[in-house]
Image 1 (cartoon, rainbow over the protein chains, first blue to last red):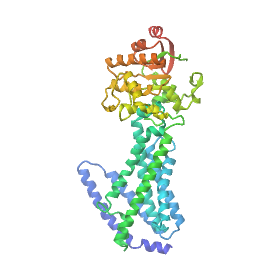
Image 2 (tube, one colour):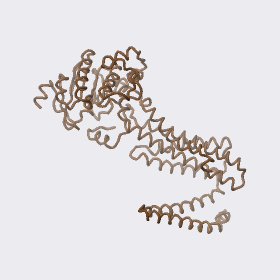
Image 3 (cartoon, each protein chain N blue to C red):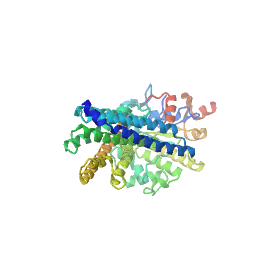
Image 4 (cartoon, helix red, strand yellow):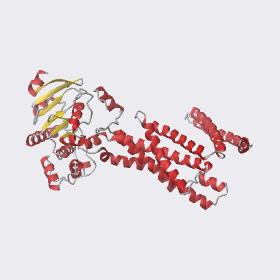
Length: 277
Length: 201
């Protein structure tokens, strides 16, 4: 296995590093151009490029190992990716108790259901070298949908505290009064994926199709398969957005139907009065 | 402290005294950290929040109307409790708050005073026993203030409701309330007949 790994790394690495040097030189020129226009991105550019290069070399090494690994390891890697995605998405909900499990279950539900469905319908082969890259694409999009949905719902709730409490004061169920805000949050989280679907083939040719064509697959089949992947990304994002907003709704209200999400200002004044929410 | 059935009690005090927070405890929009509230001798935690809020209605400082027509806003509360208001009932409520024939108007075209009248009608549609008013006239001009005050007095008297009104305006407390409670630094300072409390304070 080690020999195979060495082979897969091979002499191409030197060529790749030389090409990366060229790409870095071009980016450095752009950074210099920005500096000339008083846009200072030097530090961020150096850090981002260094991180990007190291991360992609590591990913390459992991993929080289994966090509020869077991399916179980692939599932474990997807699980770890889902945790990392949940941590990233949960950063949008700083200060909210239980944000991490909320994001994890939403992403796991969306990505998990879709990956399982793809495996069951044989549109995804139970082969680690296919499962991990396709799975990671679905998880990454579920993460974005989760972050966008909770961010939107949070801002909708904060912007409509008065109307929500007016509805609660009339005896409405929290689910009824926040339904329009949930709908707009899920829609907002789906919009980038819908645009992605609409522009498929017109504005961009996604990586899976490009990779399949390069490796000799029929371009028509590659195109149809890419459509399947994007459709599954859309489905995973929809499930994630729905689960995330429903979970967040249940956390936004107490058992006595009191709105518990508040802006920092309102919370400070409530605490001053000795309220425990 | 006790609020007497059928009375109008004003709650006055400086900004940040806790007047609005006190009102929010009474319909359980906020949870008391200690103690409880009794509604007709019944611990209010034994009543479901939805039923409690139907019985203890609230009108806020801003109207916070829902997008749509005036009629839809008025029908909202009863609908939450499985009751459909007939157009005649909606018309009757609108007439009572001085907005006859406006059921189909969109709420986005209302003045501040009109919006607050709709908010009052929307709360009254639930037929509450207690009416909580959180500075209902603070965002209105002087002419609208007097109109809303007269409306509140008339409705509370004819429906024999118990009413608590938060106000920063002592003259308003004198015009409306039989008793007044003064709050300061989140504590009750005094409570008693309005004239006596306000003049002693």
